Image (cartoon, rainbow over all chains, first blue to last red; front, side, top):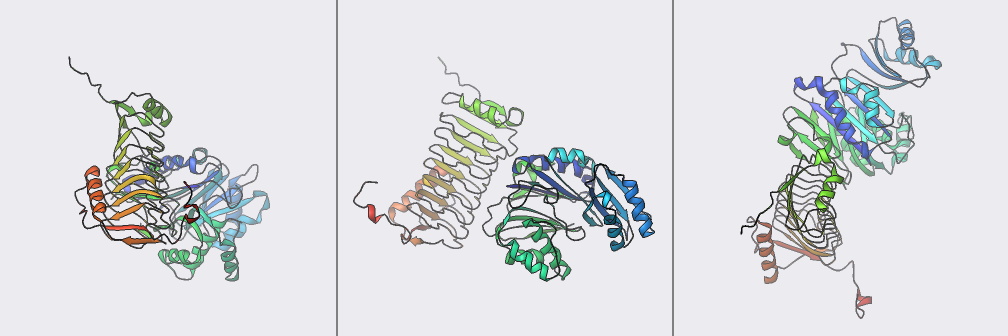
Length: 299
Length: 232
C-alpha cells in the first residue's frame, strides 16, 4: 500500500487555505502509509529568473544563515532563505551549477537538495504524516497545487530519500502507489542515456524516466504514455509540474484512485475519505480513472 | 391496541467511529431501522451482522460496506468504495450511486443492487449471490465467478467473465471483450424469466429481458471429470 493525495485549486480564494485542506487529506492516508511521507506544494512566490532550492540538512545542528552566506559568497548574488528546523527554502537568481556546488561543497552542512524549481517546495521525512505536516508547518502553507504521498515501503528501505515525491527535474514531482518489476532494466537504460538514479528506489526510476523524456521534448502526457509502454508492474502515478497535473493507472488498475472535479478545484486521492473534508465535495463529479487512461489538467 | 413502531435510530459515524457504530448495529433487534449519517467514506461499516434490521447509509461509504452480512438489508444514498457486499451471505444491499472495485466479491447469497455503475472486477469469484448493476461494469468483471447471477443494464468492460465456472452473466448493453473461456450463449425462456424477475427485484425498468446477451463458461479451462462418480 501507499497513499496518494493531490489538490489543484482553480479558485484563487482557496489558495491561502491549500496547506490546511491538504494536511487533512494527507493525514487521512496514514493507514495506507505510516512509515514516511512527502509533499510538493507549488506557489507563485519566486521572482522571475530566480529558483527555489528545497534543502534538507542531516547535520545535528545547522546554521542556515551560514549556508546562505556561503552561497551568496560563491555566487555574488543575494539570496533569501526561509528555514524550518532541518529544512530550508533558498531563493536565488544565481546560476544553477554554482549554487549546487556551493551547497554541496561544505560537507559539515550535510545537505541534500530535495528539489529545485520556480514554484515547488519539496518536503519529505520519515514518520507519521500528521507529525511531518506539523513539523514543517504545512497547514500554514499557501499555493495553487499540492501533491502528497504516505509510504508503506516495499521495494526499498524506509529512508527520507526513499520517501516520495521524487523530483529529478525543475518543478517535477512524482508519487507512486504500487511496485515496478522491471525498474532495474530501465535504470540501466537510463544510465546509458546519461541519467543516474540516486537511490535504489523503483519509483525514482519512473521519475527519472519522465524527467529524461521531458528533456527530450516530450510534454507530460507523452512522457506518461511512454511510462505505460515501458514500465511493468502495478502503479497509480500522479505527476505534477508547475503548470500540469497528471494521473495514470496500469492496465490492471488494482491500485486505487478517486478523482473529484469541481469548478473551484480538482482533487485526487487513493481513497474517498481523504476528499470528504473538501468544500462542497457532495457536488463534485467523482470518478475513477480507467486502466491506462491518462488524465491531465493544466493550471 | 395500536402497535408502536420505534422511530429509526440515527448514528453519527464521524462522532462515534466505525467500531462503536458496528457494535450498536449488532445490538439492534429484528425489525429495527437505523440511519447512519456523517459517513465520509468510512470503511467496514455494517460488516458481519446477522440480525434482520434495515440500515440506511446517508452519504458515500468506503470499503467493504455490508461485507459478510447474513441478515440485514442496506440502502446507500450515495456511492461506495471497494468490495461492497463482499462475501455477502443473505440480504439486499442497494446502492443508489456508483460502486468502486470488487462489488459483491465472493458473495455466497443475497443480492447487491448498484443503481449507477460498478467499477472493475465486479462479482469477482461470485459464489452463489446475485449482483444487479443498472449502469456499466468495469474490466475483469465476474472473473472466476463460480456460481450465481450477474445482471448488467449497461455495458461491460474488457475481459468479461474470464475463467468463469458456473455463474451466468446477462448484459443489456455492449461487451467490450470477453475473457478467456467466456462464451456468448443463446437465451432460453428460462433465462428471460430469470432476468425479468431480477429486474423487478432490483427495480430496473430500463432493461428488456428479451434483449440481453447471456455469457457463460465455455468449459474448456476447467472440468471435474475425474470426480464425476463422486459426490463433491
